[in-house]
Image (cartoon, rainbow, N blue to C red; front, side, top):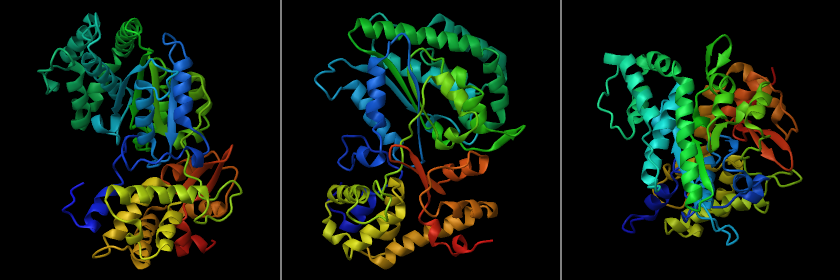
Length: 441
């Protein structure tokens, strides 16, 4: 970071809440012990144990902003460069973020299939595997059929032969009025397209094994950002993709990890997805600030200490003494506590606090203003019929109803999920500050 900037600017820029961190980033903090489960280690172990010709398919879930992408970066790094000398071999990993390539406000399986085909071809082409060609006759034939069926409706006609489906992915993202026709054209060839990309994945796996690698893994990120809205006949966009298409999502011929919304795990049809994927799922949970006995968070609980380490890491990165970052340590502890253990919220609070002062340190008044701004945003968005349900989670609860309202409250970060051997739930602590929360109807 440029040292000619003043400390306030440096710290503000170091706390970008929308920046996912690589494990080599100086700001990255390992949170496994205070999440209740090391999902990355578990996934890595399972993929190494599995037969590469009988792929594993997994769901990677957790609250939005809890750090899933950073954890997937860590998983990718471990698969490509095993940290243990006992695991000298490595995987070829294809990682892509769907939210950067498609419109998560309106996404269906044909869009995702086309995007996956394009990224598999593009990234395998860059792998330079001996004796392997990512441009297959069957995929080229299917591209020609799709292009022919759409005719003049397809704007991007000059697709390069090496990744023809990449341009079609762009069509899905940037031409919402044409999506229905694009999807119909792909849907008619859905079975053949899946078969063709699976042939490609199998050939790539064989080439990798012959080269001494462990095989191929796909990490498909960003699907947890898919907006949940009703589409037809009482089904949501989440139902349409993750439930209705679960068998197809599970059919790719390579180890595959999908990010999914945490609310999906509370659908009555979750068992259907688990049967298709062949596993029971453990989400990346919120950082537990209360400790094992679920007492009130204090600066000494492991979770609070982890949140403080996150602030320390940002200060070091910005070359700011943490003693100069706050008017007193209690101000920083207050912000940590109000996050409820949500890492992105901590960065949002820090940035908002810094934006309320002329220069460091962050004052208690600025910190409270940052929390109040978020509280006001929550007040505007929470539907009237949510309040009575939210009041049931004023104290830690061992269970949560499995209905659409509670699924939405999880998705919208009104209720947080934690782990201590088993899940438990609590209302977002900022909601407690709203006068309406304490008014029973």
